[in-house]
Length: 561
Image (cartoon, rainbow, N blue to C red; front, top):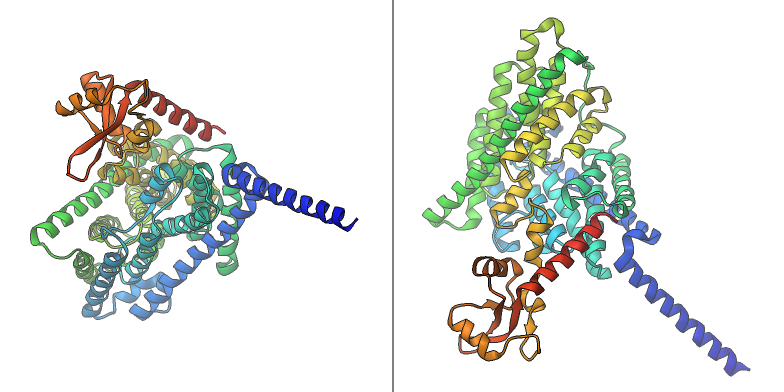
């Protein structure tokens, strides 16, 4: 009797263990469609939201300690009364620390940001670099605290990616689950950073995952709400910017003015992006010519920023106070234009010098200044049929930021949620649509995708362009000895003609052979101990096309599930 009971208990335990293993397998590989996965999304949302809030508090605390101000939101006014040597010294020393941190934690001395998260989502199953990400977070914290002229969103997004990567490694998540966990973390971080849950969720879908699949929507929304709750528990239910005087829009008469503003903002965003890329290329050229160590480059950038800040302290940090002045219409036309130009130059110097931070907050400031300048002109030319020039500042803020990010939907919603005023929606939507339509045709869709193109990572054209880079020749080839493969002698004959490809090479490198020379197959080789190459198989054109089609089908299935 006891033996039979023991047998039944053992069987039940084995069955429970098998069911648990099956449930774990389902969670790992079909997680986004399971209710249990939503609890992981909730936990990641809380963690990413808390990290974003902590990052912001860290910047405020360190900035207050370095500059000796009680309210960092009004750092511009306070810095005007500091001695010039202190304004010069702080960003220089900050840049030196940033250079050392990045030298220790990254292989190339480059800060990781939103572009790297997009690359991780597309090419690395939702994973990002952890060590380099932590180093970049520290570098960005120091940069923003010591006067660097960038924004918070870039490091916050990558920091969220580090959190989701850690979880993915713990549960050994597959590609779909990994990407959705990454989307959850990004949504929570953006939501907590800007107190904007709707925009945070859409930012993750529109910018990072670059699709709106139904299976990803529920967990990403849960994470975005969790991040917002964490932020509101700490800071309260407050908006970043307040429009004190609601704008009135003369619909039929003023609409062409906002269309024109959108086009101007598209050109401004293009100038902003080109300035950053030029500064990065020029900085690399100078570094190579003078042969100074890479850890010194951010210090040189910090010194240049310090020199600028002596006369233009509004460039220090995120630029919250200047953005408020622009949105409240308290700047003159010449001042708004001058501040926009100097902020663009400061942002280019900061990022070209390989310091930390992102581009979104500076784009908001430059857009607000651009919109204010346009509004001052428009309302003075036709005062009887124009609304307030403040409304143009809000529309310009959204238009420049949307063009830089390549995210018209989420940026429009971020402006709504930052202000809490939905009456400005029409003006913002019109300006945003025109700016993104123009700028996306003059760069590779957005600042982030253009960054990747400059590194020869081709994501802007879509999966059909980058999927070939995910498939290795060694995984698709027919091995020697396979009856469907050519013989070793035939492989060696082709190799003698200079036709071969490494097993570790991608199909992206192989396809030009087929297209250019109309070859049926290419020998696949591996390096040998003598420095030569040994054939191990052959890559056939038809097999490469089949593998490519399967990858396209899997991507389409994920994006439409």
